[in-house]
Length: 111
Image 1 (cartoon, rainbow, N blue to C red):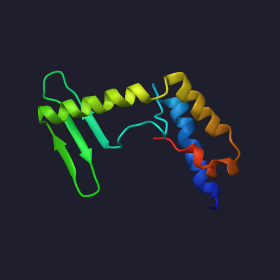
Image 2 (image 1 turned 120 degrees about the horizontal axis):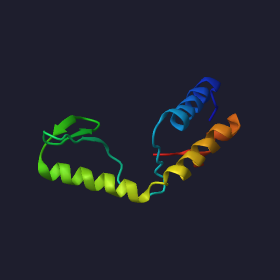
Image 3 (image 1 turned 90 degrees about the vertical axis):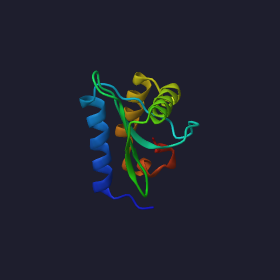
């Protein structure tokens, strides 16, 4: 696989933004035993929580209590297996410091 310098620069810029502009970063290692799901949970003081689930064929907003519980369980699981904040920041710093050739290394995958 050939590395495109522009793509590498974009990824490096994203890593730098995460390192310096985000309050908290936690990385889930690629070998962590979790089922990947693209979802968001919004919780409000005076309204029911809403889960947004994104899939290949459908995008769904859900307020069903069972779905909210399952979403919270997913986030709890991610919190258990993710690197802590300091480890995550060190990992991002490693990626920023790598040479361009090393960015093609399959070991750089993150969730």
